[in-house]
Length: 451
Image 1 (cartoon, helix red, strand yellow):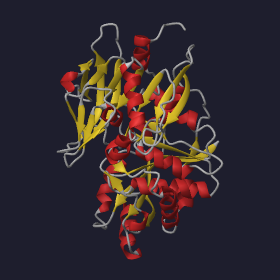
Image 2 (cartoon, rainbow, N blue to C red):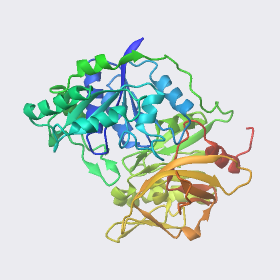
Image 3 (spheres, one colour):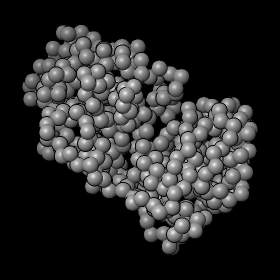
């Protein structure tokens, strides 16, 4: 069966590909297409917005990450076919620039487009350029002959006369112009220091609706769909962990402060048992559980609410200090520390499950893919993940670092994977969609095997 499927990309970040991706997802959903969105790379904010754009009151369609650094190519293909099995249209958003990868173009949007045989739509910020886009587009079309660049959408174009120059450039390099998008501040999703704002008190759905209406006026969506129709295998099998014999209860922190989480990680956790979601901001009781999972997020933006909820903080401290199994990543690590110091130097008490502090003072970005090797001769796996934060850890010498961490180019870095009793924590977001050897490792430390 032929359905429209395409990848939206750009020469670099900040060209507007997320805005146009969300617009097209919603525009197709309004035409009654069952749209399956994907995101290249490790970003969990864009997938959150993709889910909003594609979902309706009747159906929730999750945005899914496709990452060939944190998972194998066969797994990425399996994810793509599995989640696309019931779709009428597939929209994939690229990451950074088209050929930007962990190392050269490895793991890039271009690699994923060619792996999945996806037509590519290039989004170009044309605010300060006219016919000079011709060599730019020509280069992206011809740099790799296996890449199928079929069309261009121009962003920040306010007049039809400006667009005529851009159309002529496209015609001369044999790439189809598919329209343009005038600048409009009303359709911009505001950003925070870690990316787009996904707070529940912010009307993303309304903004996405305005995006779709705005973009539909000047982008030829019908022609885009016609260009990008192609065969897709209706595979529904996917390589993943087999169902485990023991059924656990897993408490998962999820609210405005903690929501940086891969859908694939939740699916893997469900294979171990039931998930009990709770809010460290507003709930007064920690669910009874065999595993506590606190993902990343924005604890520094909800620092007062988290600190004021002393009932939850004390219960989490008691759980961890009594040997409960817990895993915290990035924002979760911050929350389990003794305190978080805000950018002005004011300290707010947190859970004190880990003997350290975190601070937003003198914020410095730590960003990149990570390779994790445990300091345990019995654990032979290399675990992969991604690090993205501005806070810094104080007192890490008080914690046992159980791993050696390297970046994508195999250079050792100072990020740790810490253990205190049965509480494990790191700034690194691990991907458990394909296999989860570290999750197994944690459970083996505290659980009886075979039950």
